[in-house]
Image (cartoon, rainbow, N blue to C red; front, side, top):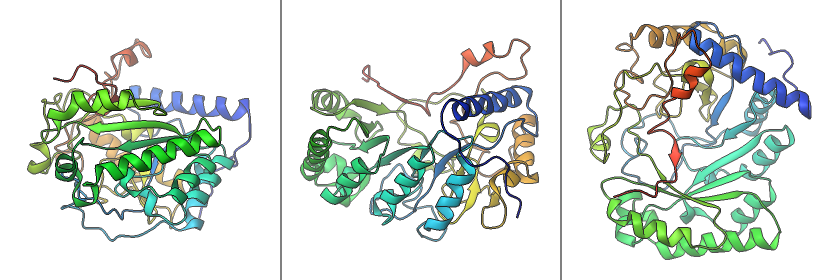
Length: 352
């Protein structure tokens, strides 16, 4: 198996400059719509597990995911971090599961930190325990998003299932985490309260914002833009409040900028691929660099470049693409027209 050269992470300014340069090379390749990028692969997400006790109505995992359930093993995780650390500065340690149920979460966060990679995590506060909260603070987690999508038990359960019904218990667990972080005199993880606004909870948006904006120890509150993943589930699509931009408005930048890794080592293009629909390779059989420069990755870029997505099941009906006008002579000024809504989180204080 080929090993990418220069993958050991060195410290300081050199590593930061290399990562910035690599991002710029991939952005330049995206603007040129090159099938082979000048930059090296960047990992956006690592799925530690696809186990989750929640039954979220807006998540395709609940009713549409068919792939096996499992947990990423330590050896695979460590190899991924070693391979990616030269060019990836941060990674989200979740995908279509809740990583709080992974028994190795704390050591994984520490391993990433020790290799210069900041860990970000989004979770359901109902799953917090005192030992888990201590681990998140003490292991060096950089940022934690706590998703609480209702003020009342009925609304919370309607959005995320019975496991999310006890809102008061979730709030107590959040308060305990805040207090422990204060006791440790720690600034991390940065704590964000998040609300995924949709048809079933939009009536509580203003009151939710008022409550959590005033909560002590919470660093930020966000109303998250709703996404419909691959756009193929009418039930999920119907929960969106506002219409999205045209799916043809931009060429998606994901095939040129990053990848997501499933718990078993298979590599997919982005955070929307809940079922391994668009497999780019397998890290049990090839290196990250080989997959990034492989035929499947180039075929995906060609399909996006040429607008020939009818044969790409993951992308054919996606209405939430990210990107900016490409092929422009005035690059990088065209990046000012970057389309990041509705994918990007935002602190939405103007909700009706």
